[in-house]
Image (cartoon, rainbow, N blue to C red):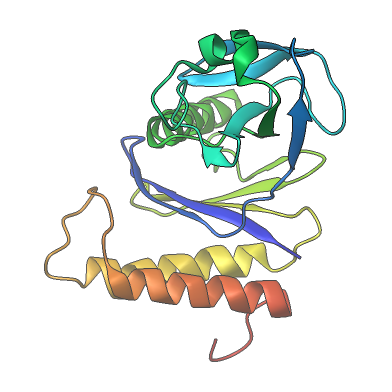
Length: 219
């Protein structure tokens, strides 16, 4: 079983902590001859496939590296625009590695804020008062679990749909937050969490959850 990532969102909807525990590497690398038989385009400071699928390369995949060198957004490692580089026949044959576009820090901030709004909408749509809001969202490849404290802090875990013990894990993360962030004299409420002890204990809690699927006494 796998736990993918952890998010902590403050009561105003701001992302104050994020940790990627496991990032699936669905990548494909292929050597191309001129002309390139895929259609690429700029999208959100990346170059992605807009048309054409083959050999594990899918529409929406981003260019991750060219000739073994990681790209820098829309540019090659040498600073050249990727689309212009690939229009030049003298640069072929060329090896290109494609994969799912990685979320930038700004995208993670935006998604946290969007979920905060969805959580509030879920509470308002409830036919009865006092709804807890969204506690779980399910897709075919992961489940999003959310636990909101009485003070409005949201702890969010993305995990494999088959992973058990997530409710106990969320409360363990809250316990770690209370013990190692809130009790840190240098930490200010609602601000980003930068605490080594919190990092270490969070990673330990995730490891226990993945191996055992739950928390026993004394975990």
